[in-house]
Length: 398
Image 1 (cartoon, rainbow, N blue to C red):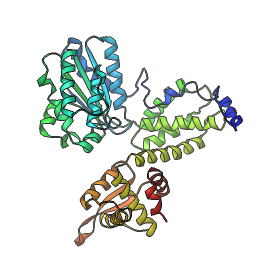
Image 2: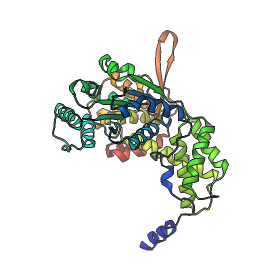
Image 3: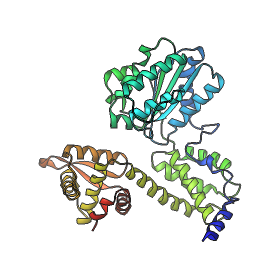
Image 4: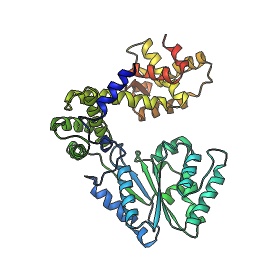
């Protein structure tokens, strides 16, 4: 059997497709960020007072997924830091990955050189240590909180409130914030005290169009792929498919990278258009799987209730009411204490927001308004992933 592994490894020792696949990774920050010159200029202009040792204004950056918000923020900060490293320090935290208030404060502390235990301290104590660390650091600190909308929806804005007050407790050194969010209405949902402290400058990132995505892919492909393996038609197809999804550059890069990986696995010398469609299916499955696996348990139960109802009645028009009935039935079967219908309605909105379902409000005349619910992804993928995440779901599908 080891001969099979040796054969696979030997075929990958020298790639006939890639020079360096890292250049097609979404988290790679290139030397140039085409079609984001205006945003780079604005952010650099706001942060320029760092050079004089002054605290710049806070910034909130809005835009859909894959519009370059994180890349531009990191690009500007890293370049400013190279030009005057002794003037400030910046700390980046992705609050979707670092997804508890404890870990957010712990990551900020560790970035400032303060070690903290993985658990065991109160939030108040972590905050006290953070204030002390910034005082001792006595320089400007820029804190980047990425995907902050998801974090606040999960834990409320208490951490933001604490951090918004931090400058009033520091005599030496000051803190500025960059908040990055997909939700253009996010700031409106904050406590007025937090909003007035944090929301000083706002920048909106527009989606990329198909031509801009082509340009981005072409530049990355020149670095990542060997000459002659890629045609313009493949680049155009990747760009067009990503442009349909709100101009998502991350999606475009993933499509191109996975298409090239498929060509490599098949030992082909060129990336063909058919591989792009194969990549699209592969990425969609992986994206849905990752989202489902990270859902809270009751969100998984609600999703399971929708699938169960659709298996029972193939062309059923689902509403919040009959989804809740199915949810109660599943909760009882699994011996789980049920949550309220209002909370289930909130979960349906959250599942709609992450793209697993579509919840559409329709007017039924004298019967009032109701929410019609349909799945936005293949129910077989949902069944397989839910069963994989928790074997209690296996008994639900019969």
